[in-house]
Length: 196
Image 1 (tube, rainbow, N blue to C red):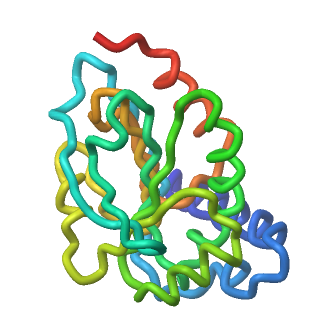
Image 2 (image 1 turned 45 degrees about the vertical axis):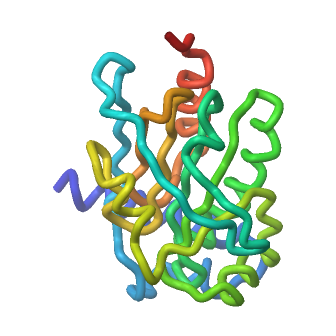
């Protein structure tokens, strides 16, 4: 019963938010099942209980420049796993783009990880939603998904992780970010942490 209510609430949220994302038919089509569904579970990990620092290397899909975990050490990092035809990914893209701009002054950086598309499809998505942060392609190798497969893996699409300044996963939203204020609260808590 509780699961049915949660599912109905999530579906209603997707419909409302999907309607706010311009006239994007894919974002509005929440009945499309051509994506790996996630249940919206939100998990936060206290600093003392976080796993090891995540290590990864990849390249920015736009210009081919190197992207590595070391580039983000000392900054809070938001990592969003997505692909272009995923309706929830399209629905949350405007919020993530706006949050990246708002939180830049707080030392928060964003990284997208495209898990399915080729470069031109992924770049088209980024232009459509005016994504201001880099993304790496992970469709062929799965190396970035594997790098984050520790305590809180990206086991559904979309998945959004908050990584602390030491490179440890501090929080995960497994699925669509249906409550932006809740996500901002989680992000604010990690930003407020004092590093050792």
